[in-house]
Every structure is written in C-alpha cells, then in structure tokens.
Image (cartoon, rainbow, N blue to C red; front, side):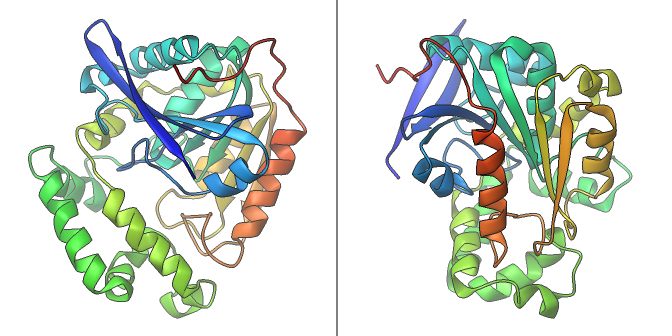
Length: 297
C-alpha cells in the first residue's frame, strides 16, 4: 500500500496524517500506542475501493499534544483537517482507545459523518488509577520513558516473536493461550511483531486516559448516523460491557460480536469475517458528496 504522510499546521499546532488509496473516504481514529502508520484492516478496505485518512491522534506521532487538551479541542482539529482535504462527509472508524474520539466527533459533527464504526472500542470509563494496568502504564509509558519501553519490546520481539507474544497475550485475549493459538497462524504472529515495531506512546496514551472522562452517556445518545459496533467475544483489553453500553445508548447502532481470538480482530482465522462484515456495512451506507476526494496537494 502506497502511503503518503503529510503535516498540517494550524495556530502553531501540527496534525500529522496519512492518506492511502483513492475512493470513498474513511477517517480512521487509531487505537492506543499507534499513529498514522496504522495498518490493521487497511488492505481489504483499499482493495474494495475506499481511501483511508489516518491522523496521528493528539500526542501521537508528530501531532501536537496541545490538540488533546480536551476531546472537544481534538475533534475541532480533526474537523479542520477534513476541511483542509475538502472532505465534506466521511465514514469514521474508531479503534480501541480511539473510541472516545470517534464517538465525540460523530455526536458533535453529525453532518460530516456518514457512518461510525467502533472496533474493539473504548466507549466509557476504562482504566482507572485503581487498576494494575493503569499503574503499570503510568510507569512504562511515561513520555520520557516510553521510547525506551518500545525499543526494548521491539528488540526482544524481533529476536523472539513467539515468546514475546506469549508474554503479551493476556492483554489481548481472555481465552486460554493454547486455544487462542489454534485460531492464529505464523503470519499473524509476524503481523504482531511488525505492530510492536511501529508502536509508540508519546504523550498520546496519557491523553487517552484523561480524555475518556470527557465522554458522557449523552454524547453517545447524540449520535444519529448508522453505527456498527464490532467487538470480539474474547477481548482481553476492552471488556464486553463497552460494546453493550454503546449499543444501548446509540439508537442507530447494530452490534456484531465476533468469535475472533481477541482484541486484534483483524488477525486470525476469522479476520475475513471482520473484513466482510465491515465492507458490507460501509457499502450499504455510501457517502454522497459533490467533492469528496482528499486533496494530495
């Protein structure tokens, strides 16, 4: 996939973003520890005639952390990016910790969103200071330390991909390790190795932990566009009460519980089911706009 990475400067603040493909536009709000180089699920979308615009969310990649002072501020800048690209209406896909951004954007700017898809998404209060995972994140992913954390993970992962995957496994799936590995291939382990090589936290993950508090039940109830909620039954990262909560509060939503191995629903023997379900949903709600091609100038 040919990926073009650009930067947009607004009021001395920067948004880094990538564009892949040509066709009906999808605006992807990536998950935690990711950036505009995200890849999961992209190939099937490009092959089916979509283009993908992925901003590095606030504090990730080269996007200014100041953009993330609130969900409202962050979404204002995402709107400015769409205006810059002359995109009048887009499909929005919000992944994992990017869930609050997608939910808030769809609720506040309904005229710009054709559909919202939540994939393994956080939809309400998630990690709290009482949680072991939160306490560990506060140490390992501090902005001054996170690059060394990821360098160590990448180094070890490149040498021992299967071993590192086993150590990280419980953060992805609540299945028994042996059962889950029957649902994965060597190619999937390789994709996880590549994921760990492109992961960074910057200031972004700490911003995510704060921004979830900006989300309210009323925000979800304000979403009017068709919404597709995709979540693994065996997600070990974002519990099942998150998709059910979104489904209960978004009247225009439908839920697709996937029998995939865990949080990374784009990998494993059921990955094709994930791709087909999403593409069918998007094609049934096509974006209609007079000028809706991202500008590459």
